[in-house]
Image (cartoon, rainbow, N blue to C red; front, side, top):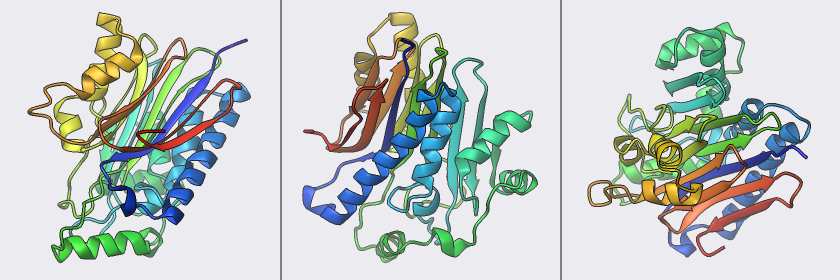
Length: 303
């Protein structure tokens, strides 16, 4: 029986239990479940890890309960500017977009950058032009404005001490051919400065995959993850030090913790189908399915 597995996340954050309404928690669990199913179906049928992680992230981007695509946080100006990246562990090919507006599924645009351009990362209008050229769906600004993000934006702009959202969505997969892939997408930090780029589209920062080690997608405080190059740190610890995946992730999360303070979470999968879901905060929306085993969906640390 050929191994295949899928791990996904919908963001890691420190949150008081009462801050997340039962309705919102239920909606997020349902969203994780649907996204996991979308990717798992592809792997189960013998499809590629790349297609599976893209399908997962598209599903989460279309779900307003996650900070990516439709549910993206708003910049200081009240605009949506999204980041995404995808990477093929077999070839080390990668595609990324940053600060892109209007595109319904930034992850599919990142895939187009990888497949149909000579570059790794395109930003803002350059990325948008490629989306239009490729006929990818674009949406009016109103599509991305949800009641939740508008409310959070107002509180931040009025400086009412609202907690800035810095969630991300991501997926890592191993397919039946033994290939690894990763996809990560985010709407960034609520109230971020115009032009800010987070860790998600940075290859080796928040996103990395290599068949000779593992695939990793990070979430949490993007600036901290970027400064630690944490996705690449996990890859290096697995490849050169031979650490088991969970230990490699824990070590990366603890890297120079005094200087790199903040919420950090990551999901990873290695070439043998071992998985890791590690985080230093009390909430990481997450789910996984290994082969035909039962799917697992969890959110709080103690689950």
